[in-house]
Image (cartoon, rainbow, N blue to C red; front, side, top):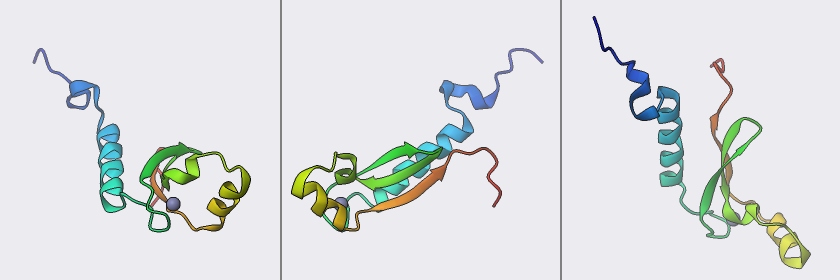
Amino acid sequence: MSGSVPARDIGGVTDANARAVERIESALDETPFCASCNAHTVVVAHDDRLWLVCATLQRPATGIRGLLTRLVAHERRLVLSLEPEAAA
Ligand SMILES: [Zn+2]
């Protein structure tokens, strides 16, 4: 009974982290591009949640171009909630 290593600490990746990475990768796999403008999608953290969003939404909306950008329904969906023990 010696030298036991907690399985969760292998490589510094916890189960929760591994799950999060899996969710992010599958979200990007499912929706690599925005259906509205064909820009690539990115995953961003916001309010303890991870969102898959169109990269266009990450740019500052200024001028006519910015206004037009906001008129289109770009890709934006929840990938993962980082809140602990979210009740199903
Ligand atoms: Zn878009």
